[in-house]
Structure formats: C-alpha cells, structure tokens
Length: 105
Image (cartoon, rainbow, N blue to C red; front, side, top):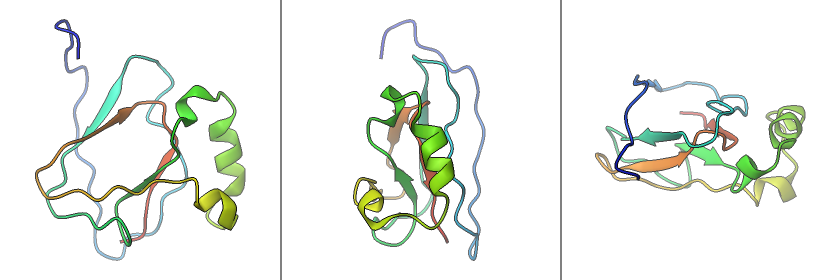
C-alpha cells in the first residue's frame, strides 16, 4: 500500500451460527479502497466464509447481474466464485468494489 494510505472507516461484521446466506453486494463503488477481513475463527473454504467473484470490480454490470442471479445460482456461475479459507487471525484484503456475499453459517 502507498505510504499515504490511511484508515477511513472501521467496523465489525458478525456472522452468527445459523445466519442465512447474504445477497450479492459490493462494499462501495469508489476505486482505490480496500476491505480487510481478520477472521476470529478459522474459515473453511468449502462450507462457510465469503464467496468472491474475481475481477468483478472491473465490470460495471457485475453487481446488477449478480443481484438478478440471487441465491439460486447457475452452477456455471458458481464455478467462477472463489471462497478462500482463512486461519483465525489471518488477513484477507480485497477491492472495495468486488462483488461478494457471506455464505450460510
């Protein structure tokens, strides 16, 4: 990150046991911003955590297409999503504009 980087907002996302899958969304539309996750528990890439649509921040129509798809995803579309696992305390950084959703917990 550039030396002039700074934190402009902070918060916490709580995902409780039994939580439903989120809708696809972006954290914002401004370029040059990043979201940082620091999970407090291990995140299994095969069952929980967040699904990301790689490079969707480069496609202005990606969010509207993802929102039309909703929860009942086309299997071919699901294959394009990434669900990285993360050990508790590790760091996951992604562009603020990447389309993503939290999975069922």
